[in-house]
Image 1 (cartoon, one colour):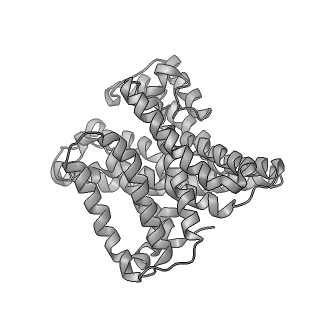
Image 2 (cartoon, helix red, strand yellow; image 1 turned 135 degrees about the vertical axis):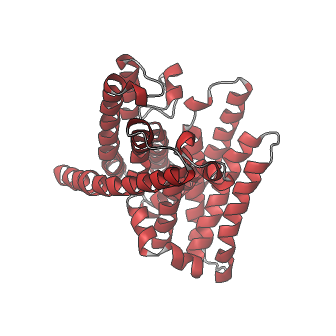
Image 3 (cartoon, rainbow, N blue to C red; image 1 turned 45 degrees about the vertical axis):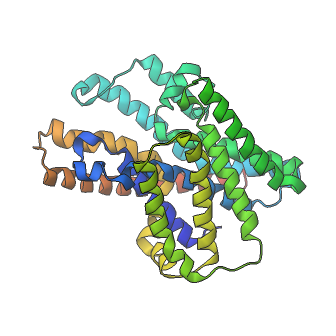
Length: 357
């Protein structure tokens, strides 16, 4: 099931994550320091909430173990081909650049550490403390930690559907509460944040499941309400960027996904100009390739700006940095279109045919 307006919002959010990760040394300061860009890391929480909603919509009933394993296979086929491809490409790039272009490398690592990072990613454990201190690097391609968190959420959802069908909403609430408690305990004992990101994914995913429950209820909202959403999104980013206060980490953990859940629910129940904007062809296309954008962008951000300014010696100025930024974004979209067609779609279809799904 695809809802065009939510796909469009997914596309916008994926680009904002790219802006967030763009290296500061190659970006005009007025862009890098913009409060909205500095808070765009939080759009990953939107992905988790949207995923919980979509999975709940498409898999409202898993009545037996055969349904469960079919569901797991489908989720693996959706995630793994691109995850495997981008992980191997990233590993080859890191080894190649460390040995042949050391002037372009910020922090080289040993082959052994790269292989540990690769295993961490391919086993989809890089959002967990499984690899201990090594987990702080979040795998070989660090945005892939969210794939790990998402798959863990998939498994929990499938098990709750299978064994707690009549209490799925209760399970979601209890799971959210327990994850928050674990996070607070973790913070008290100063465990490394990087090894516990799966908690963030589980919370967002289960809030998405609750959004689906609200969506099934018969109620309506005034279409004009959605016109406030862009302003709210901007204001929330400004607030969290501008103010420091106690328990900000916990509030981020809880409030961000709740807020995105509210945004999704309003969009599902309304249809006005903001919906029309999100349903535009460019944003829908970006939404379609957003998974590829998300897993590809770090590689392109490491290559294009450094080659432009360091290898080719392009003088840095506000204009040249803006042009290279535009070129980098174009390469991200073009390369992600390629991987969407030839990795995500092609291998997905081949695996479905192989497993007769």
